[in-house]
Length: 245
Image (tube, rainbow, N blue to C red; front, top):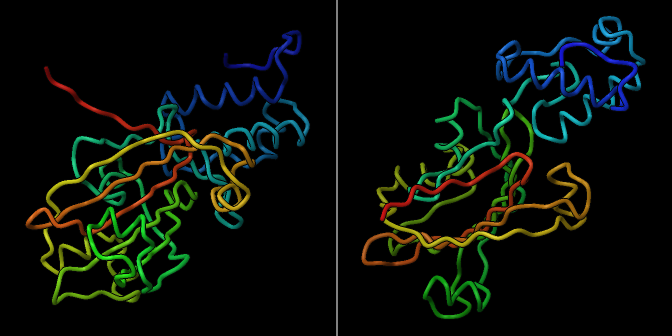
């Protein structure tokens, strides 16, 4: 499809969206480039601005583009979703960098507080042991894609603070600078529905499907270091495994 067919039963906005997706997949607009302004598309395809805006909204919701005032409409990806492996212990930042995407984070909450009973059990520490609790909103190309909730029990003799994490940009990178090795992790993955708060943070409708990954990362002597829960937009993410028999 490379032209609008006004005799087609398909809605005009849907036809325009499919045309633009074909162009994205063909590399006409590579990741990081800017799509033509809405008025250019209105004139090029002889469509109403409302129709063009609906097509752009669909592309943004599906994770193809990010619309930012002052920057225009930035292309984020081709049709395939952001791919994260589950067979290696890598950080969000490392995975996104490997795909050529700019990854950033905003710290929503940072506190030291007694570990809840369930978290203490996972970290194998006494209940009410002080742990660091960090909640971050993760962005790819300035689009919010994941909420990362971490409980961290630092090894004896080490510490961290909010300013260090903000400077490092990555929790795992900060662990590396402190010479805390990350050796292994257990993870589980499940589908959940977005509640009102998660929908607001991720820019999706309430009830939208999300992917939740929970894991415990261990350091030396099989000592749990971090429990994390990562909630991602399922329209942008997929997780991959490589299995051998």
